[in-house]
Image (cartoon, rainbow, N blue to C red; front, side):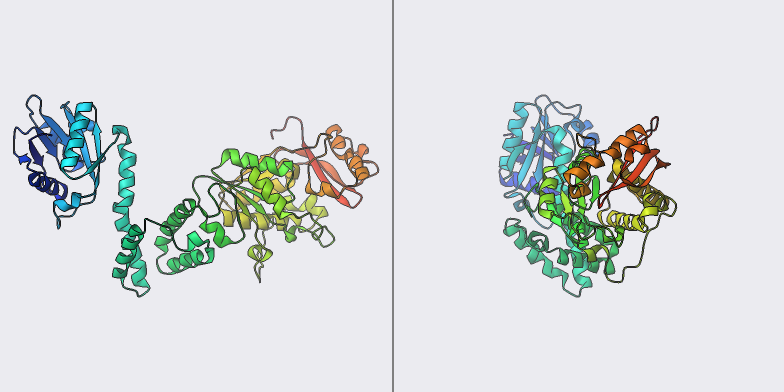
Length: 479
């Protein structure tokens, strides 16, 4: 360890370091010191270092956590020692006791000196790479600087509620003393309380709601609630809002009864997004009065297992009242596109589709939503709605998935008897051949070119009691 040190800069850090060095018998001098220790603001380190004329064999160091060693140019015998601590002028060298220190050095000799200096100061040294400084310092800022901000924000909220802000300090100290063990509504999965927090903040300090949301999301993603990496099943808007949102979000809207067509949409969403949400909601508003709402296949447990296997992060399974609360009376109607083909034969169908999709977009706030080409008109209606209403979501349309015999996958295929399924194969064959005569024996609702994007040849038929739709993209059209 060096015998003499010149401490330049006697602010909060420099004064504490100088006092500790004196306590430990190190001589403090103004010039010709074995070590010149720069305790000046980060922006001044380079200029001060260049102004030092060091004799042969003498050392220079700075105490910044963010500034690289290159700031000490042109000196080559150099290192940095950053006390991992916050300082106040109201206290002395005891602030160093028990703190850690980051030592950055380019040679073993410099590292050894940095560690020796840390021990003399009463610090616990660890080595830090020069290129790791920004990330390291960001962590320090979150733990110290932003803790001050959080205390001030919490004080403002508590004071607005009529409680004394000074009551927060024992709470914050005990959180540290308890080893940062997480407690509270997110740890318990109490989403109603989380939502009540948001509503209360919104009513008094709406500018602070985004901060609360960021903190809630970060807390949940690190809480281990429902198991790290496991799919979460949620049923309310409050639960959705409380979920972590980091990066892009992809939504796959479904009515359940998953098959490989649904799974292909989930896999596409997984490949393109950080978070994948699948909604499972049998939307009564898109069923006509004589249609199959009551017998539509439902198996949430099976669907959940398939979704999790496909890498889905969140399965949203809302009850009817979450989508259509009592008194609901607002509907979305895409007039022209929603009145032809399926819209003509199923009046009101696309009103239900557009409304539920917009509701899901508002609840999930996805960056992208995924639909299948098999439901080409549905995808076109949703695209038109998004364009007309300036909804901030990209609509992705994925290729139709077919069984080996050519029949497009559909949840309603489960209704078909073996004989009906054989008869249903006429639908894809007629479309491929552009020959409606191949549909003889089936009840045909329509077989016509649809001027969608891209243009398709579309058809709908009834096989027994089951209604099936399909389409093929016309040659020369871009999918």
